[in-house]
Length: 343
Image: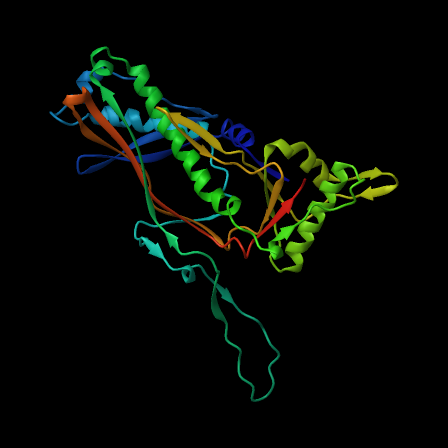
């Protein structure tokens, strides 16, 4: 059983070694910062000169050195908040993606062999589309400002905190964009499984019977689930139920099969100024059984890109840093998800 949560993903990253090139834009030029991770430790970059010298470099522009530092700090923040939706979604990364994609673009091949008789025609395969909403590529932005005080007092530690926060916020947004279509969907009766078992049964037994019935329904309705989405608050009970091998009052409860990945997602929240932003996680009274990939697409026209802009002297702002991305989600939820009530 593959368990996907912030804890397991961070534990996996602590064993990772590798490097990648992260793009950033300075003026009309695209450059790259090298992100290196050795045994889970990301190589960071230290300021080689005072912050003010790098901001005033070349007149109104920041230096490549500073932008490279910003990009790596943002990546460090992204390492702190891991994306969890990958087992559900196929990723399509293409800079030529249009702003709006009709649902029929999510095609798959369909072909069946038939016995051939003399004079009969060959049955040709076709392309079939997943039903679902129109997919739209949206623009997502965030930014921060370096004030004159930060520059004049060389408060580079504040710069690093701002950079890292942007990375954390971006990955949190990515999780929200991909889980929200599943968590917010208005499920029809055919996609719902009620709490099973007798009222006198132990809660664990009722949870077991509910999950078993939910798995059965996904098979009967020709959308067999292999991924479960749930709240971490229910992790112990869920994994006991899946593992099975118990006897209660003379009744055996064998292990439940079919689900190979469990994702625990409990949302994220942050307060900027007086405004609090909250991304709801999986509710504790629900479990979602999902047939992944075919009806779920992560659409990336452009992943997070960092650019610099001149400041605003009237507000004592020396420099503005902006991160932006073009992203979309296609989720054919009704065709691929079963909602279980577990309370």
